[in-house]
Image 1 (spheres, rainbow, N blue to C red):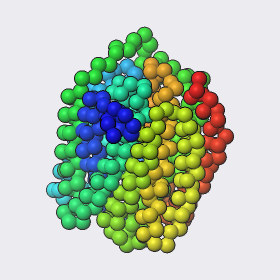
Image 2: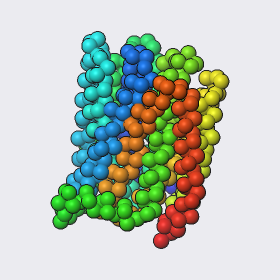
Image 3: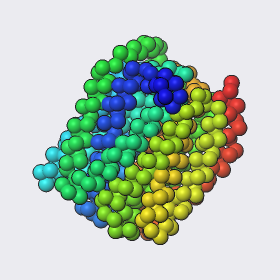
Length: 406
C-alpha cells in the first residue's frame, strides 16, 4: 500500500518520516534503559517499594511541570524544545552508564537521574504532541498519532527483548550506554527537518498564558472529562508496569529475560491496536473505542493479577498493551481534533500530566500496597479502577461523539 493512502499515509510527509525514523531508534534505547533500570533497582534492593519510588521519581516531574511545559510549547518553537529535551535525556543516559559501568552506582544515583529524565520528559511530551499538527496537518493527524504509537510500541518489543539479553550477559551499564548513543538518531532527524512554525503572538504574559490554558479546559467539559478518564486509567494500570519485575522474578522465577518478554508482549499488542486505528480516516467512533478499551483493560488486568503461570501472563500482555494504546491514542486524537491550535501545547501539557504524570502516584500507591497486600491484590485494585473508568466513558461517549461532529 502506498504511503499516501491507507494505514501509512502520514509517511508521505517528509518531516514525519524523519521524525518516525529517528524516534524508532531512540525509543528502542529508552525501553532498553527502562528495563535495565528496573532490574538494577530490584537487584540492589529486592524491594517492591523501591520500584515504586523509582517510577515516582521518573514521572513526578511530568505531574508537576506539564502545565508549565505546555505553556512553553505554545510560546516557543516546538521543534527546538524537543531538540533540547532529547539532548538532556542523552546526557542523563550517559551519566547512568558511566556510574554503572565503573561500579559506583547506588540507588540514590538512579533516583536522582530518573528525576532528571522526568524533568526532560515533562517538556518533551507536550512539545512533541503539539508538533504533530505541523508535521502532517489536520487530515493525517489521527494517522500520525497512531503510527507514532505503533513506533513507540515496536521499540517496546525490540528494546526490552534486547535489554533482557544484555543485562543477563553483560550487565545494566551497557544498556544505558546504548541508549545514550540512540539519541543521536532523533537529534539528527530533528535537525534535518524543513518544518516552519508560524510565529505565535505573545500578547499575554507566561503566567496569563498558563491561567488561560486552565480556563479553556474549565470551559470545555468534554476535554475535562477525557483528561480525568486518562488520569484514572494511568493510575489503574500503574501496578502492572511497576510490579512487572516482581511477577517475572519473584512469582514466576523467569529472570530479566522473562521481564523483557512480558514488556515486549505488551508492546506487540499495542502495535496491533494502534495500526488498526491508523486505518481510520476520521475521528468518528473513537469515543466507543475509548469505552471498549477501558472495559477490556479491566478484564485483562484481573486475569493477569491471578494468573497461575508465566505463559498465561505473557499471553495477556498483548491484550493489555492493545487496550492501553488504543485508549491513549483515541483520547489524544479526540482532543487534538477539537481544540484550537493556540491552546494545543497547554492542553497537551495537561494531557501528558494525566497520562504520564499520574503514573508516579499510581507507582507509589502500587509499591506501598504491594508491600502490605501483595502484588496480585494490587493489580486487582488496578483492574477495578479500569472498570470505574469504563463506566465513566459509557456515560460520556455520546457527548464526546456529538462534540467531534460540531
